[in-house]
Image (cartoon, rainbow, N blue to C red; front, side):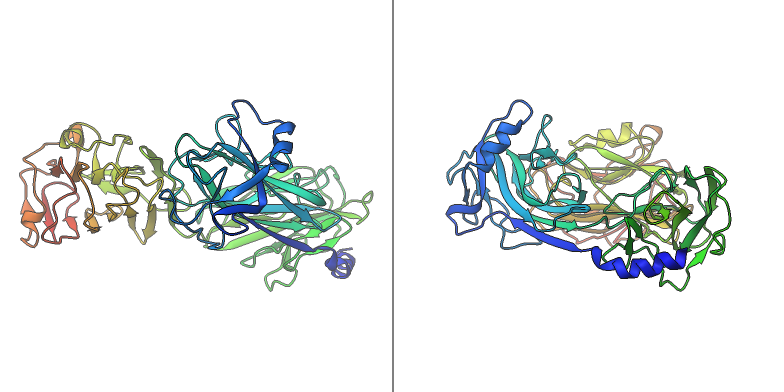
Length: 539
């Protein structure tokens, strides 16, 4: 049975075709009309309706705005040819619903995905409407929630639009909301349209999931777990008593229909049949009856990527079999977590969870299994912080913390990440900027913990010299549970060797109410050798 499936699938593999469609804003010369993008002006105080989309498709051409206008970032990272567009050349440009047509040549759409890169002034969508629509239907989750994205590129990746795209002429709609002054957008869109699904999806006759996670026609289910962590693989089928098997590969990943997979009479073989590691749970005898739905606990003891696909006899189907969606259990996870932080807020990070998969860290003699990475430059314990006005008093009276706190803008500039190397954990603020400056005051630092061991540190401190007058506090403190000697100057003790305090509970804090921490001496690191405030070294 399975050998017949493979042979027929090879013969039918040409059915899995792919069509790539690229759209962009700025089709023409600035200043002037866009030859492809049209618009209808807002505002849109209620949900968009069919008449709004029809008006946008039949509307006036959008205007291509010259480079270096209104302080906007000129180019998208993936498409320098894309240009800014708006409702007019002069501000204030209007809130508008933009439309651009595209044609799908294939007579059948089995699956489709969309990647979109975007700069927008001020917002995509709002609380009533999403930001992206295809043929008048919304793509959920595509409204931007932060302003300032005219200088910070937004990406929507691998959006599943297979139920929205149709053969023939389609329209992509972009709702750009302006709240005053300049307004417009700059976009690049890539559609991938497939004549058949790229990935098999679960069906009543054959279903497979890991802890409830399932795939879609454009992507398999990939579940990341730590080495040794237990997951449950759930098997399901209405064909109780009929022959079944499970194909498994490790470390070879599954293959899509257009990259080595096979399509046979509506069933997509996504397991890699060419993989050297390919094995079958029931030895490919196809005589083992399916016992009914069941869950199988699985724990993988090594870092590896394991993929599986269920096959079961299905006499009523054209192919005679049914396949489940492919599932992948990935324990070979890079221990890096890149955070998406708001302007003022925090994210709680659980250290034992994927992708970090590490142990506790020690701070002031206490072991913590989680920490809070705060938008404004510090790491805290027991609670996060959303305060944007840095003061020494706050550090002395609230939660334990370490870092360099100031009013930062991580939602628009730079990156914040958590990574693990061996037992050490690093929280890195890279190229973060002073809030409200449009990208000035570029600064970086890393907060280091050494697992259960004592040393903690602030390292790789650097600032570009353009910081303004926003207050800043740096160092470390046990907060309300600590003791607090006089404030310090890290500049004054740079290179002076170990500095000693009276108590391990002491804080080590520098405060500048009128700007960045002083750094005339060029210090880059503050080491706390025993993980508390009893001593420290600045270099």
